[in-house]
Length: 226
Image 1 (cartoon, rainbow, N blue to C red):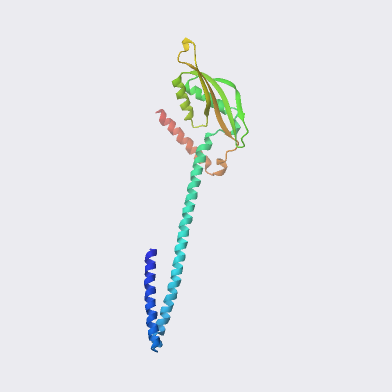
Image 2: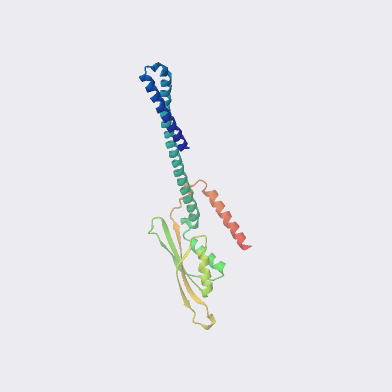
């Protein structure tokens, strides 16, 4: 479109130049009055053309500027939505700081119950509060199981929605003949309690989104059981 406008403008300017040459020839012959009206008309057209070209260039620049602004806005909006989605998907996986005294133990007992394994809790929950944004908690648990069940057990923990990690473990073979293939297993479970969760204060639709996420999880679990 811009190329067509420039081509038309170039043709009009060429015609104007020829018109001025004709006016100059007639003026030299003393017949200026014959071309007074035409001269004024051509001059007006010439000025309008320059004005129109300038306005057109301004419009083109303005349009390009608006397009760039829209692109920047779309990029910013896309980045905002991506960060919002990421935050809303990650933050609920971490437990609330208010429940740090019982949350990890409760989760561990639930994990072992699901796997039909008896746990032995060793010592008390330890906490590291040196970080300014979160509290790291850990609890050591002992049990007995074979190699294959242990591998499946670890895989199940890694696939949990909640943030629970086995950060270290040790395996020792049982020496008794009655426990052939059974191992003594010691594991350290860890989690992180953010000192402040910010998503709820940032997004007005937080409760609605979290409810939708919980509904989707529930539907997946029901579908998996079938």
